[in-house]
Image 1: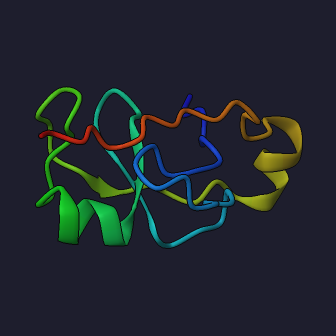
Image 2: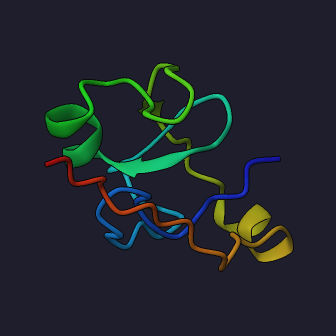
Amino acid sequence: MLELRPGCEYCDRDLPPDSMDARICSFECTFCRDCAEDVLGGACPNCGGELVRRPIRPTAALARFPATATRVHKPPVTRA
């Protein structure tokens, strides 16, 4: 079952469970639509996999299987 992570790993933008802007790869790395499309070019920087829209968990299922509160944030690396 998907963890439904609460934020973008790149910019740390909040992504609630019902967000249409959440993008994930097959390893559940999570990014906002802006970072996924404009910065990352649709590819996960961690695994190289395709970033696709994260599905919305139905409200009844979300009550029984809540989203995780654990945030993963890997700020962009600045290269000199």
